[in-house]
Image (tube, rainbow, N blue to C red; front, side, top):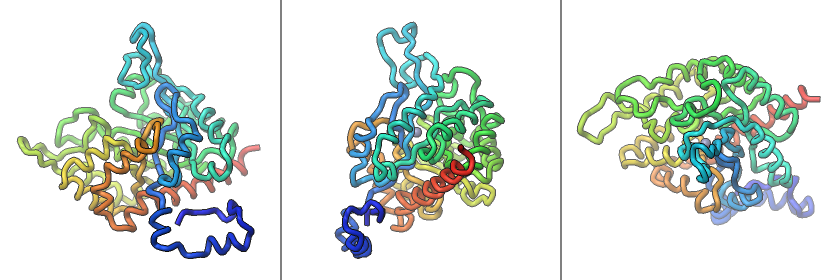
Length: 371
Ligand SMILES: [Zn+2]
């Protein structure tokens, strides 16, 4: 049954109670159940253009219940010297640098503040416009909370290592060992902000059988912040940062399930209890359904650890609902293999648990710490 907050019921009070208490028929339930909440969604693109917020609520419609809301903090420079009249909108379309465009947070907050309260309740805005290689980065996060109290639920998606992107960012190169990053994660833990972190587990085109280069640093970083709720985006994968393979079995298509083992080892490690994974991005979906064997293995993992995994689209500025649902549908072969409980948690339940808790904590911190 779709959630109707009692406070938003427009009927006389006693009728509201009746409506809320009435059990939905099986048909109603099926018709009104949302497909998912979107734990990973970009309203704007690499040049700060995107979907109008009202249009996005229309796109969510009766299919997507709730959604995170963030832009992309990295702005692609349009360098006339580099691409002339061609205006790049994606980081692969230009050799010119990316830079941190902090105004994205004001843009997201202002869009959110234009909405009615019942529309706002469906969204969880996130702060992204800080430089994680700057010791002052954390001050930006605090300043955004001070400027827009009552708006934000978390920080991210922000990026440390990402194929083709990290090297293009103007200024210092981000690092998992940078104390500037520790300050940000520490502060997020103190406030209760959910963190969505993109960090490729490995370098592009890594050799099969080798230890993923950023895995140890990533685990060390996560362990340094046990009080911070951190979602590792895309299971640590990228477009060319493929699922880690076991020792190469040359000439066969069979891949040792090493990436799954790495993720499982983290999910069973008590020192990483505060860590979650999102399975967003169509690139990740493509790996997951690349063969019936891989799909089955992925489904088995999701069924085993349903409390720690969230679905998200990673869509950027979608024009319509069909586009917004495409990534969800790629997962169909896997949805079909999940238990109803696991499926519900990954699509809906975990989002509500994690983001509702964060909302409460952040609002309480704001009340206690902001004048
Ligand atoms: Zn993303």
